[in-house]
Length: 63
Image: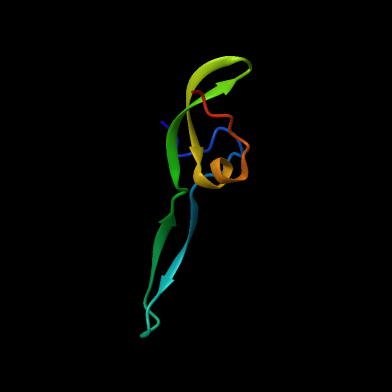
């Protein structure tokens, strides 16, 4: 199962963590995904969406 938002396509980002001593190591920033029951194309479906899409109102939650 991919760490990807099904509405906006937000996926993990990669970069470096740099310490005070300038030591670097790779790290990964994951999107904040939640499983919600949403109405997609008129059908109630369980989807993984990021919290930014939920707050923006892009996801119509099923009651």
